[in-house]
Image 1 (cartoon, rainbow, N blue to C red):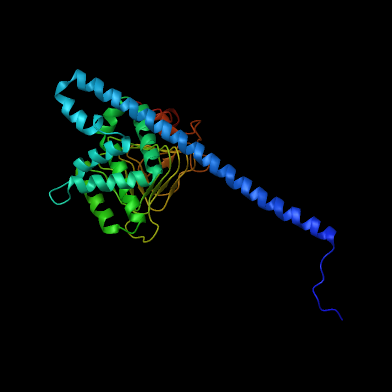
Image 2: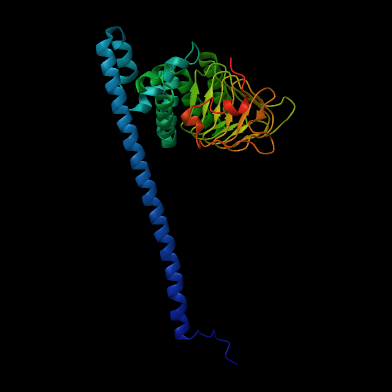
Length: 319
């Protein structure tokens, strides 16, 4: 008996080989397409950031000419820098430094973090645009970059969060403490925050360790995204994309605020809010009722900043 391995017929070989080759070719093609798409997206993000930085420098030159008393300040914070990353790293370093946490150390920390992760720069650009578009009091991008403490607190948090994910927790917590001291905004370094975020006024905002905030969310002052005080582990709210959280709202526990939902000023929310619904009051109730809550037309109230569209359905009592 011949124990030698039997070769398959030539036709079978011809049938199998192209199939394997085609699969490998498809995989290579898909990888190439994904790489090309990523390169195009990165180039577009770079171009957007460069264009915004050009506009910020033009605004700073205009302001320096109009107000010579600010010329030195604008030169040191904006005009002397070659990029948005360098400018914001310098500015945050000077804002958050102390007698024992030197501005030069912080500058290097911020710059290294921003330049090592392009997504942080892209989020900064989205946050700048969010403030400029949504807040009628924001007169320019440079004004936001230099003076909006909600914007600055978010950018500093992004760095502390990056440190937290790198297991550099003592430094992340030290930075968190300085952010709280300087900006009166308390965001735990572990909290996950999207892009296109507006912290309007920002004073008194508290965001707990396991909280998650989606993209294009607007949050006003004295908002708490906290725990119930008795739970451990995953115990903080999850805020969906496009939400609007009014001033003084308190959202407690591992609850979900659905995408496009609104939480009215001063509300206390302890249970989930459906997408594109509105919760108001203490304790919060859904406009339209729990069984069939009213679903508003806005997909992204976090961008429209419309706080009062629900009032006609909520009450006919008008002061």
